[in-house]
Amino acid sequence: MGKQLVKICSALLATAMVATGCSSAAKGESGSTDSTSINPSGEKITLRILENDTAKSQGYLDELLNAFNEAYKDQGIEAVDANMEEYSDLAENGPYGYGPDVLYQANDQIMTYAEDKHIMALNLEDFECYDKIPQEAFDAFKINVDGKDYYCGVPVNVQEPMLFYRNDMMPEDWETTWDLDGNKVADFFENWNSLYAYSKYLRDNDTSANKDSQYGLMAPVNDLYMMAEFSFSYGGYVFGEDGSGNLDPSDIGFNKGDSAKGLLALKEFTKLMSEECIDDSVKTSRYSKVADGTFFCSISTPDTYTLFYDKLVAEYEEEGLSEDEAKTKASENLMMVQLPSKMPANGDLTTDPSTMSEGDFVQTKVMGGVNGYAISAYTKYKEASIAFVNFATGYDMISKRAEILGIAPTRSDVASEIGGVTDIIFNNLKEGNIYLMPSVKAVDQIWDPMQTLLADVGKDAFRARNGETEKYTDTASMQTALDNSAQSIYDAIYTLAQ
View 1 (cartoon, helix red, strand yellow):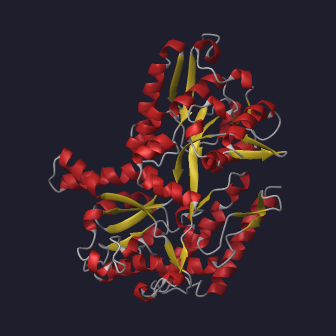
View 2 (cartoon, one colour):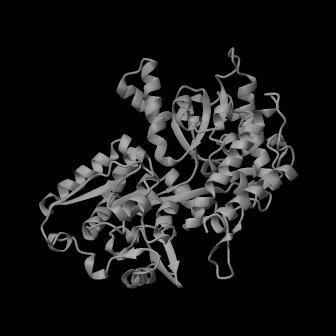
View 3 (cartoon, helix red, strand yellow):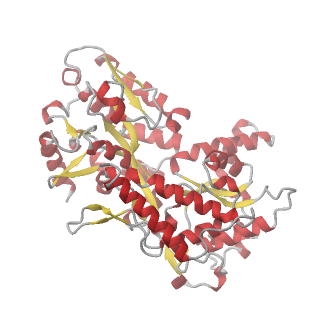
């Protein structure tokens, strides 16, 4: 569907969408920014805004609220921090008047709310950013009801797992030893076998008393979002499609294809990590341990760039640099790149990459998502909420968000100015190398079973050295575990929920 047709349809359908999918506001209630239509009563309006924790801790939310409040002070409208947890439950709080008016979250979470009518359907032409954002990003917030498409969110940034590292921690001989094809890019940023080999080299040469001062890749193995490439690259997926091309949650794909090979590869790589990778502790320690060089690299999302940056600035200051010198050096040396694009086709990371050809690899495929703003169906101030989302997704605020948080913005004008990683992410999306989280309620049921399995696969990497019996020793045992997890997901969607 072309964007102009989408624009026309969204205006018509949002008006019609009353008892289905998203809740809606009539077309006549939106689209204007004058005080008469936004605040016809002239009463004081206070909008509660739910943002993510990083935006709050890094000061972006304050910047946004202050700028909006200055712009709308003459219209009696004020936006404030909702002072709720990042993943506060709109379904629980909204109906009783305790939820936010506007929320910023990932597409899967917003659309879970949308299925149960907790989110307001939007007229896309109400938003200045509409013609500047790829349709693929808007489609992440699309819901189909009775054959009609409705849009329930405005995209802000696209996410995928990225690799973070310090450029000044690169091995001195990387161009001669770790760049076999001579393309001026280290092999361990291009294929997983080389990243495994370099990580093993670092572990083998760790001379500290406890052998805990030098790791290659360290990542949260139990995190499905970060580790899905070990399934998706081998033919796995979340949900399949029915004959009409719509998502079919009964077709669960984590156990499909050669996913068992992929998870065995993950187990093999985990042996080169420490046991903190099994639980959530590495999600906190990765920022400081990349900064101090304990981890050569780690995996996170673009919107955590500033968390790595702040720790690296602090590290340089401890080394004696002034604040300005430390910030300059951190800007020069903190790198964020895509994950290695090639996985071993046979799932064997231990194969010497120098003996491998292009046919020995498969394309890395990661899980991704689109974060954006949505408006609660329970807000008393629909027009003011629309005005806020319009302001927050405008050029100035998206530019400021990218500057402060390091996001990959969906606005094409801001993205073109930033270039670099943003271009890479959008190219990955267009080439089908990012599997966007499905925008259906059933996706809520994938996390616990799969992350329980991933944590156990991580534990299995250490069982032998801890004197325990390993559970996943071949593709058959791993396949059985994947089949059980897929069945658990199915039961959660279709049986336990009944």
